[in-house]
Image (cartoon, rainbow, N blue to C red; front, side):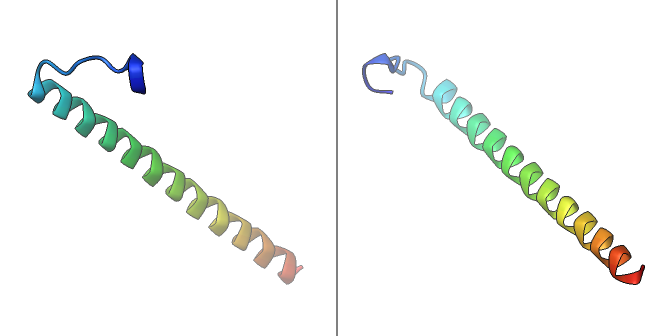
Length: 53
């Protein structure tokens, strides 16, 4: 950020923004993990089907 960082006038607004950013990052992380988990279970099911045939 450095010199492009805006001066923080309202502490409340800045903390709210950081909380929202953290929450968004958390949501992205959780959805990514869920997607990976679902994909891995689907791949596991497909490999099980292949082993059956």
